Every structure is written in C-alpha cells, then in structure tokens.
Image (cartoon, rainbow, N blue to C red; front, side, top):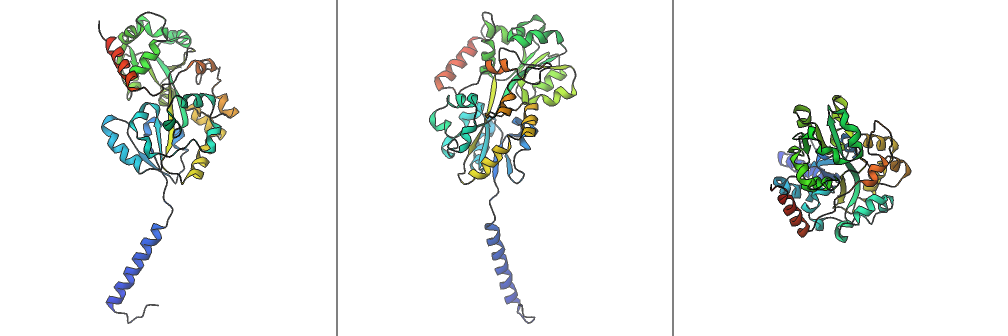
Length: 332
C-alpha cells in the first residue's frame, strides 16, 4: 500500500512500474488476425462473412499500387486475390494451404483449375469463389433470346459502337473464339464503345451504350434499381473469374477452417449466389446453385456452367503471342 508520506521520487517510480506492467499485459494479448483484400472485388454478402474480430486490410490491384500491396500483404495473415493478379505476388512468402483438410471439400471444377498452376502455386492457392461474367442488355428486349443462345448477337448492326467490353484482351479474344464468323476478333472490337473495368455500368446507364460485359457480382444492385437492364448468360458459356485465399500464417489453421466451413451455411450460400458469388465446394446444396434452369434466370444455367471457361496463368511466351495477336487485329 502507498504510504501517505511517499516522496515524489517514489511516486514516479511506482508510475514507471505500472506503465511497464501495462505494456507487458498488452504484449500478451492475442494478435488480431489480418486479411488483405480489394473491397471492390467482393460483394457485400461475402465481406460480411469475414469474422468481425478480423481486421480487413485494403489492397488495390493496380500497377501503381503494387508496392503498397506488397507491404500490406507482408503484414497480413491471409490474402484474397483474383486470378488476374496471381503473377503480381511473390509466392515464396506464403504457406502451403492445400494440405489442410479443406482440400477435400473442393469440387471438380476448382480442382481442375488448380491443376493448371505449377506445383508451388497450386499448393498455396485455395479457391474460395468463382464469379461468372454476364451480359447486361439495356432497352433491347429483342436481343435477349439470341443472347441466351450464343455470343454471335454481339455483331448485330444495331450494336455498332454500343458495347462496353472488359479491359482485358484475353477475355475479349476468348469471346471472339465463340463467334461463328471469320475475323471475329476484329469485327468484335469494331463494335466497341469503350473498354473499361471500373465504371462500365455507369457508362451503360448514362450513355448510348446498349450492352456491357461485366462480372456478375458487380451488377446485382444495378439490376434492382434500373428496370431497363436485363441479365443474360449465353448457353455457349461465359468467362469465369476465380478468387483465391492465400495464407502467410501457419498458426491460424483452426480459425481459417472455421471461417471457410461457415460459408456452407445455406442462408449464406443463397445470399452469395444472389450477388453473383459461387462457392467452389462439393456439397449437394452448393452444387445445386450451378444447375439453375429457371427463366427469368437468376444465374447461369447448368448448360452455361458446363460450357464456361477459366484463364490459367500465361507463360511469358504466351503473353507475347497474345499481345502480338491483339495488336495485329488493330491493323486495317
């Protein structure tokens, strides 16, 4: 007990000891789990599943932000990334994740896609979501039936200069290959109003554009507020965007597994699918979300899923060939 006659020096010493005790107590508190992700890539229903006591660190997948990303990822336990940016990260800093029991829950589609990566990447990537691209048609109901069948409708004369494409030559080339005509890539590009990944739906709503090709997860809120917009998934299939989880920490296996298992709750599955996010796991209920045959359709039909395609990482040679092919299609 403090003596009422304690000197000022003694009082200050007691204060120092108390402060050191407080610092030591704080250092023994459990470390807060950090997960790095780019918010704009993920529907609200998915972000809401992340445990509330985890800290969500924001990253931005743009060339000018890559160094900042590296620093944020370096200080996070887990990272969420889509397949388009796989080559921008250093895999040496991540732990093997597919040795967890969770690998047994993956469905055939995700296992096949994992097989396209090299062994080092494959062991550290856990597929946590797949998003189909979709076609949004504005004020052109007569186009819907033909769009449901194939991508050929994109060459309609009434769409000349009125299509908003993703800013990805690889996606556009893959769609061109589905169109049954010669010089399909050159003809397809001549239909473009612009190429954009960030503001494509704002452009569609506020311009003369009639069609936009966008990830399904980005458009659900627009469909609810704008009756001019129609959602279409061609039975020929659509491009798929994959999202992966990576781990820098081998100390949090239990909490990671608990979170991923929680995603299989039926109400969560329903919310995610309604916002364009499909879980690549093999439970019967999850797989039922890949077999929709209802019209008006709320997602890709079973036939569309069967014909859809993913994008493995390109080799340097393949990147050069793609760039040359794209540039050649620009010449008259």
